[in-house]
Structure formats: structure tokens, C-alpha cells
Image 1 (cartoon, rainbow over the protein chains, first blue to last red):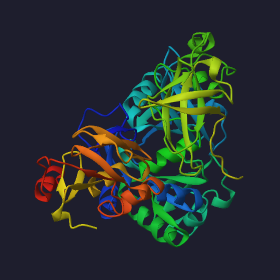
Image 2: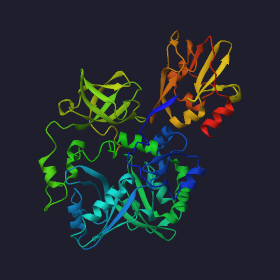
Image 3: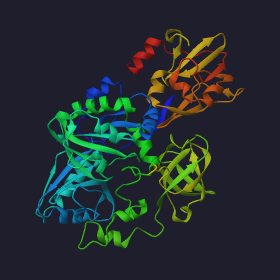
Length: 385
Length: 123
């Protein structure tokens, strides 16, 4: 038996430097995790069963270590105006404590990274980048700051990031010993908002954000307090069904939720509009921003667009598998799996616009056999409000 | 479930239990663990002739795809229907109910002992 494809370790942006370990690594070892290299980090891929972890997040909650993510602070009087120039969205327009998904574009309109930005104060934003793009993002953000009154600092090494995701997440955080001083009570904290809080005297930032399609929270805390916070969350969460959850289920969860993964759905040669992210680019905002002229010109006519695919049976199309309409090659899968929640194969793929209509019947070449698949709207899974 | 020390192994992370001229084949716990939760197994049909070292099936997990190689040449005399219906058996009992195929052979190639296989996986 030979492993012929694996998407979990396929982040092509692996760091050339030595392998990095999360501040929570010893906890994962004690829990018996299997590890994978993700962007140069040894991260837990699963603790026991990735299916069980997936279902736990959909029905109760999972706790994830995503400390490999990058935290870049932007401080200064021009912070809002600077981010309007540096990123595709209008970050100056978000309210205090609000979070916004955005894109870091290059001059050609390609995507350097996708990011979540939190407004911590009028003149202070926290930009969270993907691990594999940490240095590209920090470099671009620093270069773009030259003409603004801002200070950009990559503080990733100071932060651990713990995500608690799933319908009982709020109850877990409220029951966690030592966690308190919420600037906004969690029952009043809306989705895509953050609040300051403390854990045993250590400041932390809690965002009601995530990458699973469920309600949940992401807790940014200094590395020195991270292990104690993980332990306290676990003690509070276990009676409510909380399980440690690895990157394998994080990937199937985000895929079901139709969320793009950098390196799969997004890359330097993809325009936001192709990825269905046209709404993320604020063309109406005043002034220039990096990538504007290229975005206004748009991608080439006939450029492929991202769609969802659903198939029957249990055989999944996977990243890089080709799509056919009749005998014509019309696209390629960027992420695919047997959906644990839905029970049938799902995929995201780039296809020719002519075959991108919902309901179009295509075939996936699954290692030599043709599997029928239909174009469906994204996301595949949406939680009940 | 057979004793692991009674089995022979391949570098492709398969195990083989020899009983007379029939080899029962499965994948090791190491392989099952590396794959993660197995959700689909495609096995050769009974009566199929298989050649040693050739791909005869597929084992898919949520995250990846593994290929099943025939560790011996011969004819498939039994294919584990239970695994086709419940692929998770390969995770829960890789050396027992999670067996995959039985191949009737005339000649047995040289395979690895448990010690040799363990040295290979480093576990």
C-alpha cells in the first residue's frame, strides 16, 4: 500500500528553515496525536479519528491548535487608511472590535494571502495571515507602509492561537476557569467580532471567528500561557463533548463550508473574482490600493471560475484531478473529499465559465475512471441559524 | 485476529497470513494510521488473476488515497465484502476483520518478518 495523494501536507510554501513546533506540542504528544508538516510546522493532523473529530465539531465542539498562523499588528494614526491601500477591502470602514475577511493582492491582481483583520482600537488592527504566507504577507505589509504613519510588526512568535469550534463553544468558554474580564460578554459578542479578555491575569483576544462553518471562537494568547489555557478549556469542555481536533478535520470542515484554502483555491495567479471573492474587493473605496488597476481590467475572458461539485457514491475527486465535459477537459479540482457530514463526495474546482452553471453535469477523472459530478452552489454545508 | 509475529510483511505496508496455498492480505495498523479514517475500499473481484507487485485495489481515507498491491501472484479466491460495506473495519481491526483479499498462490515470494517490518517503519 502506497500513499499516492495527500492534501493535508500539500502546502507548497514550506519554510526552508528548521521544522517549527507549536507551544502546545508536548500536549499533542501526550494526547497521542499524529503529526503532519504544514508550512514548515509539525502540527497535529488527528488525535484519534478525523471523522469523529469532524462530527464532534458539527454536533458539539472541537479544540484546535492553529498556533502556526501569523499575527501582524498595525498601529498608528494612519492604520485604517494604510490598510485600505495595502489590502483589497475597506478596513477603515469596520467598527471597533469588528473582524473582516480580506485579501492581500499583488500589483497584478493575484492573491498573496487571504487574511482576517480585527480592529482592536481606532488606530490598531491585528492582521492574521496563513502560516505558509507569513513572510510574504509581513514583507508586503511592511513595504506598503512606507508612506503612512503606521508601524507594522510581525508578532507571530509571541502568539499561540487556539480555536474552539462547534455549537457548544460559547458554553465551554463561559465555563472555563480563569477566563474572564470579557470587554463584551460572550452572549453579546456577534459573529466576526472580537473582545478583549484575560486568562489568569494574561491578556488575550477572543474572536468569534473560525474556519469550520460552525459557531466558534479563536483565542489569541501569549505562548507562555497557552498550555494552561488549552488545559482549562479542555476541562470545561469535556463534559460538553469537546474533543481535540486536528488539521485533517479542519480541512474537511472548511471544505464543507465552502471556504477557500490558500495554495488550493487561492494563489498568486488567481484573481479574486475567479474565486468568487469579488465582493471582498472594495472597488468603490476612494484612492488607490495595490492591485486595483489589474482588478479593474479583470482576468482574461474565459478565465476559469471556482465552483462546487457534488457526486454520488464514496469515491472522491481530489486536488489536481481533471474534469471533463464530454471529451473536453474543462477544469481541475482544487480540494475534494468524501463529505463526512453529507455522506457523498464534494469538491471545489476551477472550470471553464461555459460549464459553471449550477446543474451542469461533468465527469471527474478519478485515477482513470470517470465519475459523474454536478455543479452545485457553495457552500455545501450551512449551519442552522 | 492473527498474531502479528505469525504474519509476513511487505515494504508497501501490507501483511500476509499464509495458510496452505492461500494468502490472506491486509494493510498494517501503521498504514491504516497514516491514512486516517478509511471511507472507501476498492478490491479485486473473486476469480481475478493478479500479478505480484501490481496494483489491485485502492484504499481511500478522508484525506488521501492508498493503492493496494498484490503481494503474491495468483487468483483472488475471496474479497472481504464486509470491508467494502464498512471501510472503517480497516482502521478498527486491520489485522482481523479488516482483512482485504485472499489470494491462492503457487509460489510465495520472500517477504519481511515482523522485526524487519518494524525496523522499516521505525515504530
